[in-house]
Image (cartoon, rainbow, N blue to C red; front, top):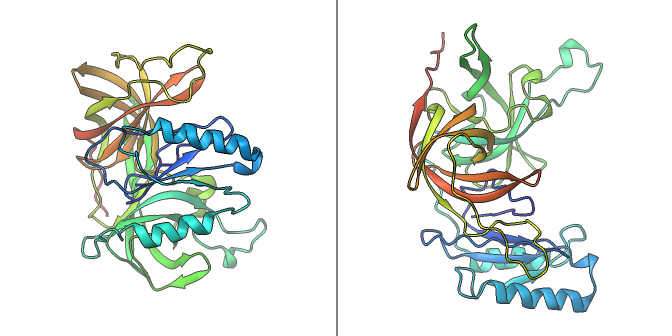
Length: 328
């Protein structure tokens, strides 16, 4: 599992098999989630070493080693890198290839892709005949996506009726191009990032408007939820919050009825109001509908000192499904 914790954001990271813990320097941050069900393939990256001198890097390397003692990351390699200048990036790639087992891929299920980017590739002033459809970029979770395949995007276009109730209209389209890097494909499989050219209005994809949506085979996508019931686990301490010298980091307070959290589900980032809490179960009302499924993992963040801070994670048990219109 890949954790890019430079911003404590777990977007789109729930389906990969390697965990890379990113260390920010000079003020580094490391999160070790005490979960026994995760695989133990962990690499710790000590990033931005180009910004500090050798002695500071050595001291922080020792601090990282001390910090991970007794956790699931104990014994994991700590690799100093500079992502901007590409220092030691080849070492990280070699370690992943040699030491990390290739995850099992599902090629037989209906294709599903989480969208993490979307854009309009048309230049200003293009003639009508030259206009191309929108492009969605993301990772395929399962199945095989093929050229000229009919696809559906959920939740799709979100609107409100006269009573203020949210409605979702799925987007239907067809795949007209598949790209990875600069390579044109006839079909795409799970793993890596894929750019999918569609026939939909580019206005729907410009400026990342499709981020958080799920693209896949028509009629085979998960349900769309307006409310979720999750069982959650809170971290013991707040992460990324500066404390005065000599003071311990603040504890994570229990969830309270009526408070607003931020949820990361797949690549979707949405607000959620806590409707009810009982022990380790919580009922959440979402500000935006989410296409997801039961047993999917979610990340929980709380507003602390004008910033969203990771406070825990959870798993979807059930929820309130929205009625989706059928294709006419």
